[in-house]
Length: 590
Image 1 (cartoon, rainbow, N blue to C red):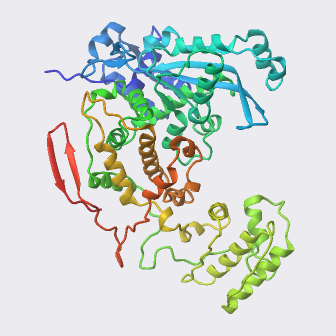
Image 2 (cartoon, rainbow, N blue to C red; image 1 turned 135 degrees about the horizontal axis):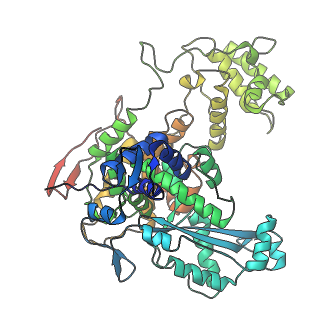
């Protein structure tokens, strides 16, 4: 019996580019065009091209040109998805693939005298279709409307062109929200960037105020900001425009800070996310699917990457040992920060260059501050006296107490004294304890910035949290394994509260952050479940109970017994593989 191949949605988009060239296109020209269109690395594009050729959707002819097979041949060669068609809406079912809409709004923000002390008035809304169902997407690719504003409110719009468009083309709010509802009617999912904190709530409130039905009522929604944090946890900024620049996404034809431009850019970001997700280790993707079986966000990525509904896949239940093995294999790819060469790990003398020392030959706080903040930093007499006092106390080995007001520069004074002490011999240790977590994070960032002038300082430094703020690998692996137990059998309708679902999405984020963070200070943050080390987005996204949930993933209850160098054995878990019909029970350790 012939084996049919399922072609990914990403490879099919390559085929669509070729199909636009009736006479064919060279591989080199195709790769250049695909790079501009999708912004993917060349190596990834070559793999997608090979997939399309092997799958019979592209033909490499003798004249060096690539040509796409006709649509009817493609349809005949592509196997139908297993199982039944996926339900869409109350009564209709299709097998045509994912239908998604990217939504964005732009609004005027004014302060008010009453809570919540701000008022948002939407002046532009746009929606862009994307997904696997190409026929549906091309039938009505996008929708956009300006909404009527008073001249006074319109004066708050900075862009002159947009302001003129609002005043001349604006439609009543009721009309706009009614049209949006019609545009979204047969979509599977609506996606917005920071939709939890802004777009979804504002759209619902504005539609209600206009006296029309909520366009998002009954719709499955995805906050793409969660996806961005999960896929790229260590990037400097998760603002949409900043992230697009960091990823070098193509921005041709996209106007920043307009609803239609940001919605189009969001679609490009999600295609990049799906492509990177598809390149992950298959086992890792399977774990996320099984742990977040009711997550619209992960379903969206999987269906974009694979081009077929996730409902047609059997859910698996993972044991804690299986989760630990997978994460351990991923973490083993990290380059060790500290080599065991017979000496105690992390022990070495800090070499401080002369330019960071003062006239007395000691580490000077102003010089340290200039490395981080630039040459404009001026010496502070109080800071100088504080540093000299600390140097004297460490020389004499005595205790002391110093008090100084805000603005003295206490952090750099303490860092100067600590570095001077560590530079004396490799067996020395310096511990800096801070009163607040925010100051601890600030000093960690300063130390990271000092790496430029003090190469290797991070290899002998670490950030230490208390038990209730340190991530427990035992608790994390157990939480992920337990999440897979709640998945319904095929055809089942079990659901769990949105808050609980998002807690499991958070557990997946913590695991992905741990895997992605290979260098400090990111690796320091990744070992923390302190709320201050979590993106502020999660406070709204997860909601009440965030702190207690994070604490349940900490080492609060003790991962290590007295004198133990490895975590204590975990509780027994069950490993159930529904597809094989086998159940076993065994204790697991890791």
